[in-house]
Length: 389
Ligand code: GLA
Image (tube, rainbow, N blue to C red; front, side, top):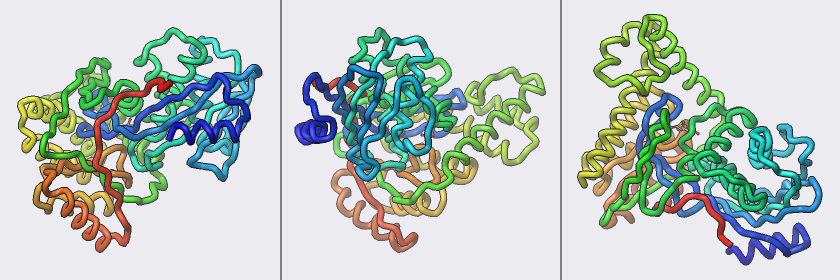
């Protein structure tokens, strides 16, 4: 595939000298949803599919970007001296935002680049195609401009680009999983302190199955920002009553039960209830997984979905139908929505011997309920973003 991308680069940008190739994965979150911006734990892993790039530095200040996924948009150009968000630059705002953030942080980027991108992550499916491209651009910048910066710092800058340049108030999970992923391991990340631990994913006779609802996501970003605002409002209520916390993730379930009466707004209370319980569930899930108890891990995944459905209200007919169909299949250990929600994907753990019937039956029931065709991917846990050659 790389050969094909290099050839395309030549076709679009002329010269093939001094080019380098890069890869950055997508991610799937196994458990710990909507906990990252609440200062809690998440447990994602990088996938073995993602975004590829062919890049080279230019002599002038021009950036020329081309995506094989959006060929109709052609080459998108912008200049180092004018790195502002521009709707018509569409997907290229992601690379632009990362370049701008690096410059704002004082890194020297004094020339433009030609970059060709190709991603095999379904866009808008909740598998972090945007974090994948952001971290990819960070890796390219570090390499081509010989910047002295480590991956965790780059991950933070990519989150800033997403928050400040793109305008989505997301937490750090996606960029962290994409940048710091490790083959055959998931990452238990404390989003408050950024301390993390790699946990081996040895599923033996089971697989991680990702199912895409193929539902167009629409208003996701504003609803996402609303959820975050509700949690912050709940924290403010607690602060007013002398509960001194910065994030809901600092509360154990027991402590939350003691103080939750201070949160008067019913909606905020439900959102906080999810955030606190999901955080505890995530810690527990990793404990049982380490002990080799995948059955219990699966049950916690199911509980996570129920909480996201009833308290956080980020599922909807499509995700619920896929998950319910999965729960009813023989060989399913656990199934839940993954990512921001409102559409996108589910993640399930399924016994290999039941995989074929799982895909056929869940797909069929989903279509009957929603009229939509789901897509299924049996996921391999891959490594984080890096230089290829
Ligand atoms: C999106 C965001 C993440 C995280 C998840 C929900 O993927 O980008 O930061 O909040 O939603 O867990």
